[in-house]
Length: 324
Image 1 (cartoon, rainbow, N blue to C red):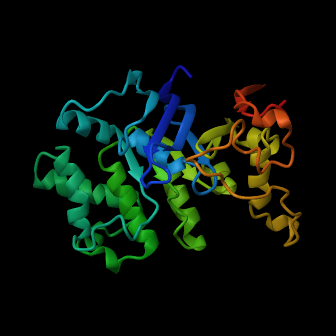
Image 2 (image 1 turned 90 degrees about the vertical axis):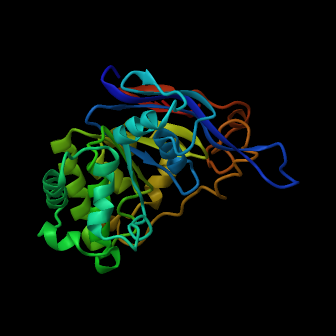
């Protein structure tokens, strides 16, 4: 992708283990993860809990440093930070919306104090009047009005949806180029999720940002994103245009996710999922395709070597020997 703002090539993240039984081993949280994110694009990263989605976001934000591979932003490969200014430049460019709207705000600070910090740290306001104007503007953009009323409140005085709107306001305060949204609506009431998602889409259009939208929900991924990458046990299993991947999945794991997704139009009777077991240990991942111990379509060949990504056309790729 020529206009890629973010590119990962064969990125791995391994964590050393602790304990006598596993001494010398590592947790394979990410293995051979490759994808691009275009300017102004929304890409969904979908998978079960423990599949490596949040670790991937943490590597991009530099909360964790990658073990190997290449990570490029705006055509520049990321190197270890040289100084504090280097770290601040990266963190201004890449921001994250966290899943928990209750734990991600300091309960002892007012909303004003929470939102002032990014402006002050990154020196984005030249005086008190400009700072005040920027605070009011960002709160109005996330639908918290009158802004002056919210600025003097504490997080415990807000609902879950309002807290998440404050989180999103803090994220966009520094005018990032890339926003990593980690399950931003999963802890909210169903009745207010759509409002948050629509607000995020509106900010994407007005701010021109790129989203990596992390979720386990295929319906939410389809609503928010034009492309989807499906992750399992630390590896990308399938990637492509969202409607294409959902309609014509090339990997059995994507079929499993589709069967687990709510489908009101089909009633409460759903056919039984044929897959068995749970995500394998990432300390000793299975040889070959990591899904083969659970896959109802697995053959002996599936356990011999990790399958390469197969090109199914139109930007659609799947890591399965049966794909296509």
